[in-house]
Length: 567
Image 1 (tube, one colour):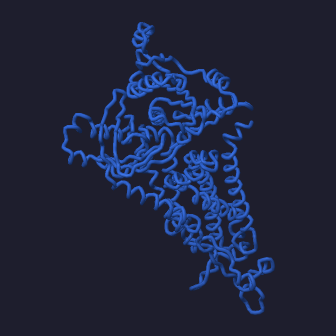
Image 2 (tube, helix red, strand yellow):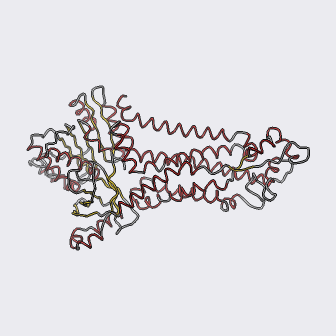
Image 3 (spheres, one colour):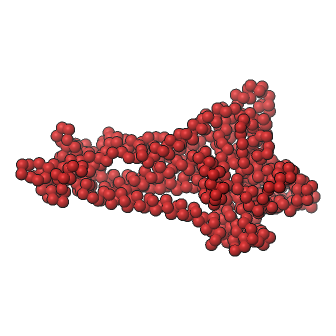
């Protein structure tokens, strides 16, 4: 239980507070539209009025939040500031995309409720205009405003129109349609299958948020939903005058014709500050995109992985951080995140880019090594990249734990390349400030070619640790999760060789998947009284499995703290 609180306590608290604020705003604004000011509006619309306005308040709140989790420079600053006070609090910032998704789902939910309620509202407005019965209060209210320069309550001013025409001829209607279409496209293109298979679709449709926010700010300027003014309440008390509507405004009547007005637009007050923050974020990216980046080395690995080694003036990084890369020759609009595989101690920074989509394929075509090396230096500069970052991740905390588990799957090993390189440099330099005393490294890979680019680093580490008598510092387990029959026969023949036939390491490659229960039990027995940092860069299914193991194996004398890369 204690480890669950350590891992998830603050996250749950934040979610509960967020849900509580949503519930409070919904109830408060629902009740706000049950007062006398809105009595005559409710005569026309019934309970659909508060059901439309309450989710609108929640939409304002969540639209205020939706941009903050993607202000990465702000998050990096906060992470660097908070982690000195609370590592648990800083770790919550690594779940920024998860919170961004939750807020988006809440926006979609309240948008749906808001739309459905307003569809009923427009039908009620239309019915009141069509029913020309002078003995009905709804008819009397709909007739208010026919005189020149007088206020109205029913926005449908004629019985010869329909709600669809009103929808496409008013500010509220047009902006509402634009907001809804933008939101539908953004959410549907964010589905995992589309985002992974057609990243460009996800990237471009996500930028419809500009239309979404512009429409959101101007949506209330039409003031279609109106209530009785404060001055009118004094001359027309609904509790008294509602039954005397036929005498409104006549001599001897104590009930004047009610005057109506819409609330002034307020959405901008909620979203202005986050929009300014996000604009500043993009301006920082624009500035960085014009800073010169020198590509010092290009390596095309057999595992369909492109390695770019680069230099940039003033660039400073920490282990496990990531950058956004743009290649103007491919696209001037697209920026893609990649984990840095170099160590802070190196005089360059590098990224390993797996070829999985159109953008990466175009990048490989441009930086095809023989072609690229044949170009002059000036031509190479034309084929440039822009860098935004670096940005912090959970892996920055790796050296704050005495015992560490690093779990990478496929290309997900990239942040741990940076960590292991840094460990290597620190021990070469006899750095006595390294708090970490033991690292358990697990790498799960579906194909033998993927081991190629990382095996050199592991061989260097293996040799270096042996020379320094530190073979117990790093324990690594490499798992091949899929293989062909021909490969299996080759492995069996060379299994007794001194070095592994796949990686060339002393430690032999294992086949299949780890028994995580056994691994966690073994580590817990060897390191009583310690906090073990578990770091994952891999698929969500593996993350759920490891998080479950962290909870089930944490006891009074040992705690497993789960951290997942999330960008």
